[in-house]
Image (cartoon, rainbow, N blue to C red; front, side, top):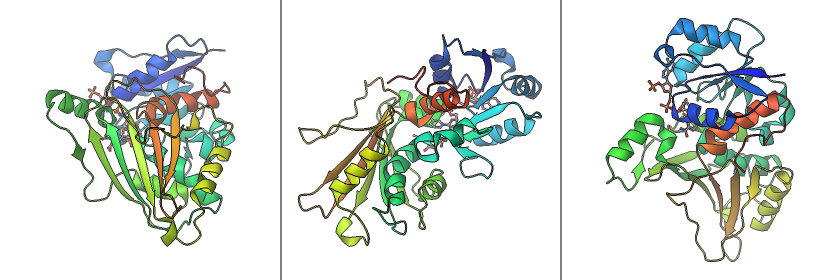
Amino acid sequence: MTQTVFIDGAAGTTGLEIAERLAGRREFSLLAIDDARRKDAGTRREALNDADFVILCLPDDAARDAVAMIANDRTRVIDASTAHRVAPGWVYGFPEVSGHDAVANAARVSNPGCYSTGFIALIAPLIRAGLLPADWPYACNAVSGYSGGGKALIERFEQDRDIAWRGYALGLGHKHVPEMQARCGLSIAPLFSPSVIPAHRGMAVDVQLPLAAMRNAAAPSALRAALADFYAASPIVVMGEAPTDGEMLLRASDAGDDRIELFVFANADGSQARLVAQLDNLGKGASGACVQNLNIMAGLPETEGLRL
Ligand SMILES: NC(=O)C1=CN([C@@H]2O[C@H](COP(=O)(O)OP(=O)(O)OC[C@H]3O[C@@H](n4cnc5c(N)ncnc54)[C@H](OP(=O)(O)O)[C@@H]3O)[C@@H](O)[C@H]2O)C=CC1
Ligand SMILES: CC(=O)N[C@@H](CCC(=O)OP(=O)(O)O)C(=O)O
């Protein structure tokens, strides 16, 4: 049976990429609203209540408003915004970490932030396995392609070709920190330093571990083995091949896909390690993850329509 999907915010960066991934899928039909009425509350309310599934690709306040407009208990929601990622009653839409069954049975799913996806993929399984401490002040650097900032940041980077690097969230209060802390079960908020590079898409998330100074931290080989074991069944979260030439590259021309690759690097005596996740901010970092969650909620194979 065909199920109906309404993407609220379909003209935005994340929404457009979801629509592309759903194009040609016979299991779903998209409810479209006239472009001139896409911000009209009455038109949206009708579509929000008609659809079997709603995917919110909106700023946080508009996402909260959209949820409040749903007046039936049939419509199921995936919210790509930050609004509900640590909210009670919402399942965190990272099935590999939250559990596929939890997502499959949920009425409300919050799609993870792009940076959070990298951090949580690396850290959550290792904390759970007792191989890293939950009470360590983790530090994380990350770079993102500018599409991570939506239409406004795309326009800015495409108009000012002179920006080579943009550091931000300099008050150390990036909006992804609460979900990183909560979903990894950390007692101390991670110190998170994001930045943007002049590439349309792509992301690297990098966690530095001074293992010798940490209580109850396992050796790099054990960290690598535990991540490989935890994600062994996943076609989406995979261990990357260690580069043989000593460098990792993000290429501005990279088309991206919906996987995330994890790496564990270490020094010779194993006293220091770096955990690195490489992903597409618009793939597993946003639109790919939305489609994966939609598939699971609809009882379909999780990789249908994904770019793997
Ligand atoms: N880009 C990314 O890599 C990621 C984005 N996200 C999240 O996804 C959500 C969407 O982001 P993104 O696609 O990048 O942002 P964009 O700015 O590209 O798109 C947002 C869209 O929402 C529309 N919109 C704004 N307010 C309303 C409203 N009241 N009613 C209806 N439509 C509205 C905008 O309209 P208009 O076209 O007129 O501006 C725009 O088309 C955000 O919460 C973002 O944080 C999450 C993970 C990664
Ligand atoms: C490069 C850039 O600006 N990135 C966005 C996060 C993108 C993302 O994950 O979005 P949400 O958490 O908003 O859903 C930012 O840092 O605000």
